[in-house]
Image (tube, rainbow over all chains, first blue to last red; front, side, top):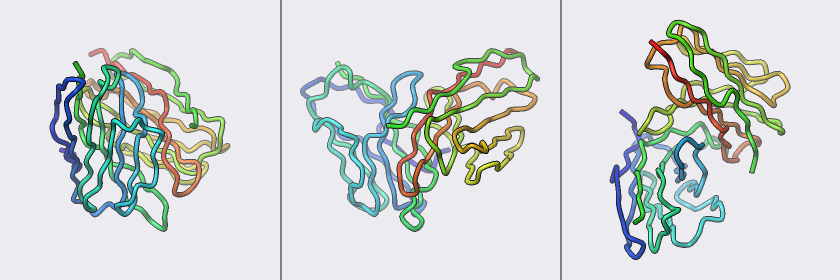
Length: 115
Length: 111
């Protein structure tokens, strides 16, 4: 079992809906990440939070809005998504040692389908 | 972003055979990682490499940090059916920076 927990595992939503993806880790990691992954492709980085502050935003459309309420939780708020946003959304966490991101540990993802 | 190319793109092998795959970059990396992803799950970290020339094993898996710092290799000995999955390399160019993922190698093991 993974130590990074993502909910829900599956989500189907219409283009006008608002929903949120949730991620939780209790490993004491101070960096948390959102990735988007299409079938048979590598994960693509979306956002990185370091010490609860957004440190990397890979030019992600504003219909994706991340939030890091505390060091254990990471949310991704979704609004007005497009069909091409259907994908597996992966959360990951890692230690930060002297400002260096350490290897990431991934959750099992949320499979998102946009109708 | 950085481009990491993995080869081969896919492999079909008989159970018991050894497997070799590699990952190359146009840039120098300071850290190389190897992940395995099963269908419907997230990537699982297999091996982390931190020094040029480093050779690290994890059971039947052995990975090497290339001496040029632009490549890395993963070998699996005596493959078994549960080795099936997609293997991704990931590299970190500078300390503090994000990891970039390779294009993946899909492994199928025929019993």
